[in-house]
Length: 189
Image (cartoon, rainbow, N blue to C red; front, side):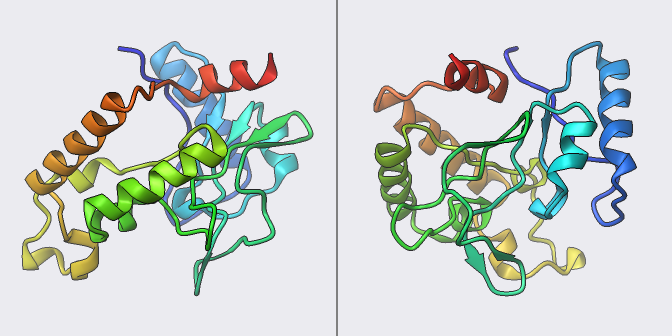
């Protein structure tokens, strides 16, 4: 359907560098497709040499922002760059103050504000790299899950409606969608 399969490694909390190649190889075997990309769980730092040695063409594991206790990547480029043979494709952030356009801001900012930040980032960078998790589209507000309110706000059906509104807005503004593999071919030509 035009989607691309990329690696998220084996485990969300337990990582060893050997998992980079193991997960890539297993995904290729299971789905009979070439896996060229990586997104680390929680966008954890990963050795650029290990990513290259595992055979990835791109890594989208950098959130170029500052979030206390999570990221301190203000010195990292906001836009794509090459490290060795690997293209680094950071997640999109606003040009000013580096406000991340990640899933938490999508859930918690008014949709109009999120669109404004996305528009500013697109005007400056000429692309957006935003991401969401499948579980965000599920009804996870049940107290049995014990998730903080800021993670479940606008989840489930509310997320479906917000996401549809975002996609419609992007399409109405003549933005196109593509895979990272297509993006990488564009920037390399």
